[in-house]
Image (cartoon, rainbow, N blue to C red; front, side):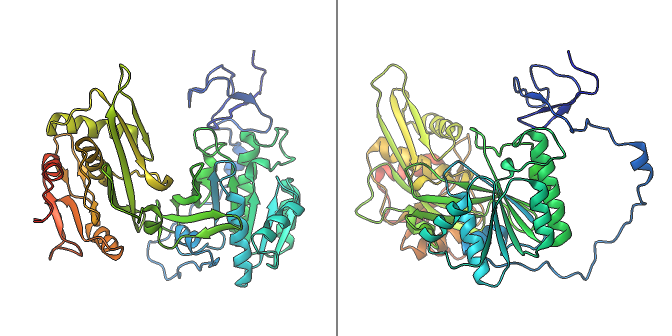
Length: 460
């Protein structure tokens, strides 16, 4: 039975309630409600504090205030995702799987920023100072003027940051920080929320940019209450598939720049290396293109990226055909297979289907539908697409190939990498033909017919 005055917080979503139950009513998680001292129930604002509130002051939209300055760290891919550099006084949350390289990336960011004149500090609650120095030596950054500290007490961290003037500070990680104002343990919803609020408040007051490292759950979500993601100015996700050296820094939220922007890195023995041209990295340049492969001309944020879709259609050895996909949405694959069967006459009912996005990149935009369909049709018909052809376009349930955004940008990137033709939507083509000749198709059946008949000499 719940005690009077007890407050319970969900450890998954951060919802607060005054009554314990086995299931959280907000996120439906089981056994996630934990009693936490110091948490405040919703609507618990005292009348005394409310009565002392000042009157609300309004201002207009027009202002002569200049745009906020940027701290250029020197890591171009990181600056790109942040919107052109880190804004002083901002708070940025970086999440990622264990071992993906979050600490390595941020150590390189503060080290290179310090070489450009910024005053930087790296505070770790997970590693000793000697471990951080060892990583810096392996990365060749031991001579950088970065102040190091191993501390998890929020009070001590705030006192140190108030005493010294820094431009850029890394907190690794927010889940290891604890405040003595709350009795809950580190990593709980109460501690994560309280520590994040104090650090963000300090960033705004002192004008120091704070980079917070966040742990993730098994589902890939940043652990702790979602209120932390609302507090910070930017949320970045550092992604990487096991077995691949490539790492993708993706912006999920950014108050000072575009979202869904990506930065590409390659993990090596001496740390992370920036990849200036990710399209060349994700493509196979050697030999003829095999049946079942199609090059997709995609857009990630503001950057065009070319990546290879690989498909394999094989007779099923079991009663139920298998569907496996890596790097693309499985629901989208099921839809494309259904359209190929019902609108194009290709049969996949008794065949296993495997689809893979080469290089470990995950594709989410609908413009990849036609590239996936072309790879599947190429494998089913055992006919290879031309070596110099890129594919893009959205496929509807009626089998129509619909136009996609920024077609000219996609074609220019393909032309820059040596491609000579494209297969895409018939409508929405750039005026004047674009950077490449495009075989425009209005329906998916027309694209499959081109692959089956090998009609590639005359482009329309």
